[in-house]
Amino acid sequence: MGGSFDPVHSAHVALATSALAHLQLDEVRWIPVGQAWQKARRLVPAADRVAMVQAAIAHEPRFVLDLTEVLREGPSFTLDTVRALQAERPEVREWVLIIGLDQYLNLPTWQGWQELLQRVTLAVATREPFEPEPPEALRSHPHRMVHLPMAPQAVSSTEVRERLALGESPESLAPELIPVSVARYIANHQLYASGAPL
Image (cartoon, rainbow, N blue to C red; front, side):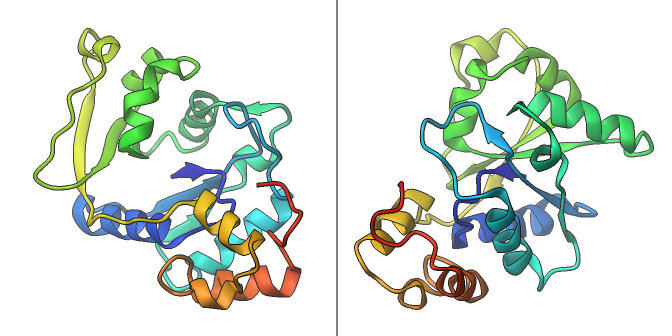
């Protein structure tokens, strides 16, 4: 499960937990992006984002932090990461890419998306009973997809950053918007304070 995790929020944790429960996965790899090619704004330093992921996933031994993208120089493309992981772990029979509905609908803009579809099963977070229509470009490319049922979660990293920049305390956003452990890290390291880039 890749993302900027800037910061990790409760919907990230809920999505990974749902994937474990519904897809019988051995593990969920959390892969913080190094340099996001589709993000115009600057991210907080990778070390802080990695530490927030560590704090958020410490309670679940099947959640695994993966630094593949953080350690890579240059922009992070999902296809490069999948290739690297598959080369590193050839014994794994099936790789599942956990994405949100917005990412699924945007998939044809991703670097090497056609090859990516051949390499992974897509697990797309959807609200039951809604089943999304695949984007036009995906209809002509056979792919494996499973729906990952999710309760509606009105939370985004952007909202968390904005509320913190407006002076709300990290603790006031936990546990509804961010895990308590992440709130503690944000407070201790004074991240997303007023004047920080959103």
